[in-house]
Image 1: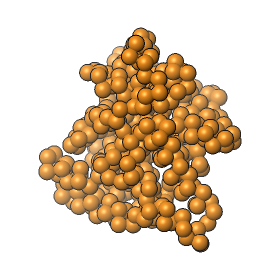
Image 2 (image 1 turned 90 degrees about the vertical axis):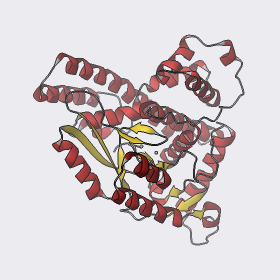
Image 3 (image 1 turned 180 degrees about the horizontal axis):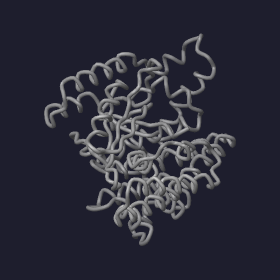
Image 4 (image 1 turned 60 degrees about the vertical axis):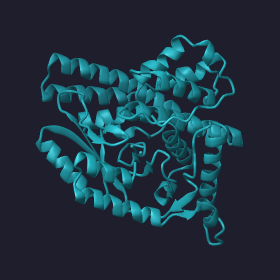
Length: 372
């Protein structure tokens, strides 16, 4: 299985995350087709129309115990994220929306064939993003086919979660309840990080930071509950994420070097096969990234995976430097990227290489909400 994709509506990802009004602005400012905008508006309206307060759902006598436990956990997780991690929860995930099994967003991403360079779409607020969402699988496949014809690698996959970056009260979609408690907790915290922080045009940093906060946040949440089994499961997921990130960083570096030197598509395929063989020998403890070993790789798939697993070790190193204080780590990252004018990853790395007196004084302080 792969990590679930999520979507920032705009659209986007593999666990992507703005919404209908944003798509309407996209139409006005960047020439999105009326059909695309209207279909997105219609489908999003259906989801919002079905929202029901989770507290009310929990009062139903006929609610099965598994669903009841997960819905209660969602409320508890968002409270933990708000009160302990100081994320901006607002009213997100206080409502529940039933969606049909086939009512999902399909995310299209694309890339140059002989360069690790993503194709991007421009939307207001979020800037350029390396993905575009569709509520119709056929429409997504048509977009991908057009990009393939134009000479790009493409990837199409379903998205099961989305974030409106705090502008609206995002509902919990019923489709998310099929995931186990540890994954579900991580998804909720991941999306609430997007409510708190979003750097326009830097999806690679936004999503990787959210992966770190979601996975580490799930561990921290279950520790507060004394749920050792869930702590161990969540920790295993995060450890696999770090392994995959380390592997992918090296694999991508080799690909970039080869592309810069000049290679053919056949030689590229040999590099892909070697990378997949290397991946198969990693001591992975879960199946979270298992598809990497068997799927037909291309640059779009690789860049999409990298967007959610880019330099995770940077965040983990800062976390360890802060003695496992996740709230403080988040605060330091937000402060660093708020001040930075260049690469946000470099800004975070700089806090590790040279912690400031101001940083040392931040013990106990929560993060400053930042919209990017």
